Structure formats: C-alpha cells, structure tokens
Image 1: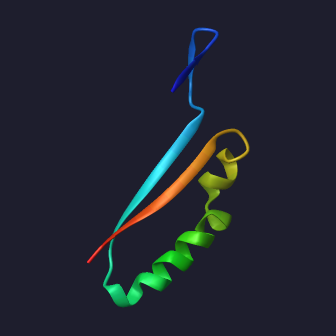
Image 2 (image 1 turned 180 degrees about the horizontal axis):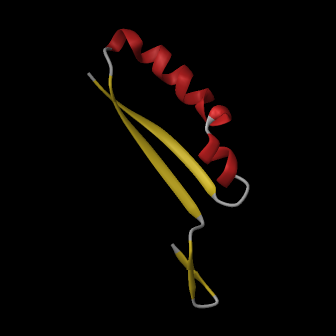
Length: 60
C-alpha cells in the first residue's frame, strides 16, 4: 500500500502458494505455476494496473 495524493492505493501484490506435494510432483508444480496466470481471471483483470508476482512454497 502506498499513498497517492493522500489516498491509499495498491501498487503491488505478491502471492505465495503453499502446496503439499511429494517430490515426484515437483516438476508438475513448477510447470503449472509457470502457466497458471494466463488462465486466471483475477490476474488477467488486475495485471495491467497492479504488479503481481507469485511464488510456490512446496512442502512434502
């Protein structure tokens, strides 16, 4: 959140996905993470206005 002329605005969003997945699925998790934004309506709506980044935290 930042102030723009005294008004709070959202400039950036960072999302961390917490997934439980066995090591054998690590490649699939990374592949899906790499392409999911293209099919996400929220990402596609906001990405032109707000910087959106994501990461995956995979737990076994």
